[in-house]
Image (tube, rainbow, N blue to C red; front, side, top):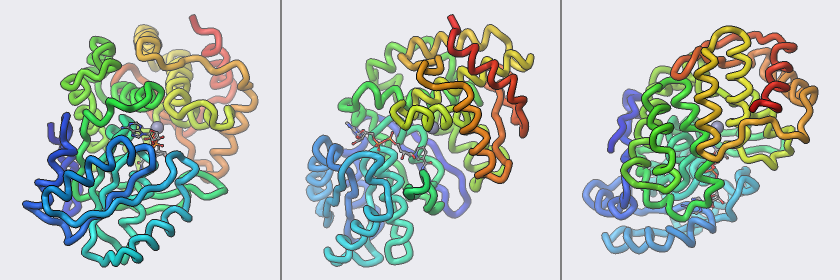
Length: 362
Ligand code: NAD
Ligand code: ZN
């Protein structure tokens, strides 16, 4: 499958399917993007896929080096970027070097950022290896790192030249990481695609079992939705906001759990809360809320606010979010599967009611 991201001169293709990592070398030999290649990855992915990729690229006669850093969000900071840049300088990489970002969203964000600033910018190819990275972070061109003050506070918009989403790479992904990505896929169905939502309902089992054709279809549909939204609105004004469905509450849930709850789980809970609120406000048919909850159950995603998290604390975090964003926090509500409504203001009591109802939902 191939999804085109239309961004004028910065347009590029996302290729999706099993076995694609084996094709990168041949493609680059035929149409080189530079004279040497640096695979940037984390230590976990280096073990699973890095050595193979390096060998495949060398077999094509390409000059390649592999740089890795410790896996995990804790590595997503400026120090890692500076360290990688210095290692590239030590290798003698000039501006005709190309960065290949092999890994999950952390690698994609770090390596994409590195590519965007190394010698004022070198080409980047994204090779996402988590479901989250394949359906979300590798599409749209946001790169960056965290600061001690908060997540993703420094970064750039920088489009890759191409994305290879190798479905086969997901085979070694821990189930919890697979669920992380699935929460975003459910989100795409909720905001934009009744067809994708129905596909998840009908073939959830095949997806959890990583049946290649089904996963490729789900990834392609997800990328297409994100690509459409991003193409319409590259720098986040209006439409791009719908990608935050479930995320405003989700981020508060994530923070309230001290980041112990995985992002996807927090987003799943956030979507359940927003669905409840949307039903209460008469925007969403109750039957659609029931379908969402059933799908989250089937995919092994949580849909209740965890007991240790107090409603008051969540509301406080949401208020704080709003302040930090100059009062611009907009809630993306649901008008049913595939349709959203954005509202600048949500009644706090109604939101508190939805949070409480989500704790005890059957
Ligand atoms: P991640 O990159 O930390 O990957 C999760 C874990 O899976 C890591 O331990 C990694 O080593 C491991 N892993 C990756 N691929 C594997 C494979 N094939 N087999 C076995 N293990 C593998 O996390 P993530 O969930 O992929 O991404 C989260 C990050 O993405 C966050 O930092 C978030 O801010 C960012 N993000 C960015 C955007 C964007 O638009 N740029 C969008 C959403 C999220
Ligand atoms: Zn998300």
